[in-house]
Amino acid sequence: MENYSLIKLLQKFPSESVNNLEEKVIAELEGSGAGSSINGASIALAVGSRGVTDILPIVTATVSFIKSRGGNPFIVPAMGSHGGATPQGQSDLLEAYGICIRKLGVPIKSSMEVVELPCGELKNRIFMSKPAFESDGVILINRIKPHTDFHGSYESGLVKMAVIGLGKHAQAMEIHKFGVYGLKELIPLSAQKIFSTGKIILGLGIVENCYDQTLHIEAIAPEKIMEREPALLELARKNMPSLPVENIDVLIVDRIGKDISGVGMDPNIIGRMKIAGEEEPSCPHVKSIFAADLSEKSHGNALGIGLADVISKKLFRKINFDEMYENVFTSTFLERAKVPVVAENDRKALAFALRNCGAVELKDARIVRIQDTLHLGKICVSENLLTELDSNKNIEQLPGFYKLFDGDFLSPSFEL
Image (cartoon, rainbow, N blue to C red; front, side):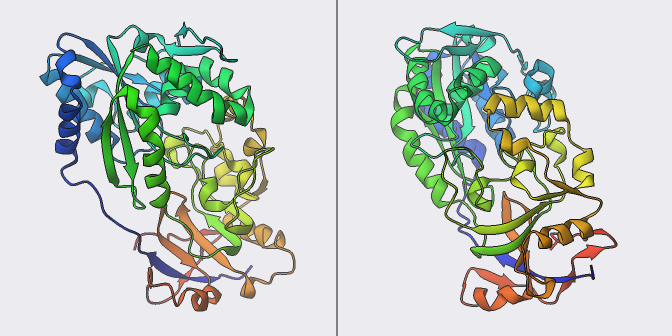
């Protein structure tokens, strides 16, 4: 395959964000009234494994606030079965985001031990992390955004963290055995049971803008989380980035990873869900997806490769199958971990991806290249898409062309 040229574009999204973030966090915590009851108390801060951009300053400010009120904070990894469902694996994931005793000055109590809570009439059992349960109170800290597996009033956020995150591997296994029904219906019902125990004293809900900056952060009393989260989810949905065209022959994704999306690349962006019984997104329509690499922070967990049609051998060699399989068997959505076509190099990968498009020649192919599904401000497209994008006032074309390949591998493209 000859070398091919693409054009670089900037997508302009709304960029409103929180100024003086740590001050805002402190103000929210003070306004919540939580400070009046934590003097001398052991407070667990539940922190997840997702790549929340400002998680370190947010947690740092929360730790400072609790200490200033005489409390004794510590961190509990709240990430279900992630990190290979091991204490060390979950600590390692947090440390990759700077959440560690060295930076925060508070202990990380990472354990897979759980305590079973009363479930009443529910079909499922309910669990909570033992260190969290043994604390005097838990503060949930999580980003609220559309989920990669299902859509409903409660998707990825405080409600799910209270159940799956804090419930560790045991809870993830328990909920996921019910499939999508467990995610849509049993998580909210289980969360209500958990909030009624009084163990959760506050939630810090984070919404990010299209540039992964903190758009909104809000302290929510536990009795208000079920009521408030759907509105924050809608705010997050309105501020999601998107691809600039709906019909694509080949989508090149430079990297996938657990720090980018729970399934490596966001189904809401690429238009692929691959869950039996769940309707596929209406757009975009992508014929072939080529995933080129795996992010370092994924620690080998390549869940989501099954959403691609072709991957590079470079990505394949980085896969930790034990980590990925533990994650996918917990979710039960096995399609997402199935290995697609593996190409020797990136040049061959594009050739395979094009062949999957049927009677489409390279010169006519509608090609889009992105860094990952979390960062869509800078993208690359084939020249034949420019006419379609001319009327889009939120697109800025950068001058010149650039070669897609450097030898047999993708050339750097996002250092604009």
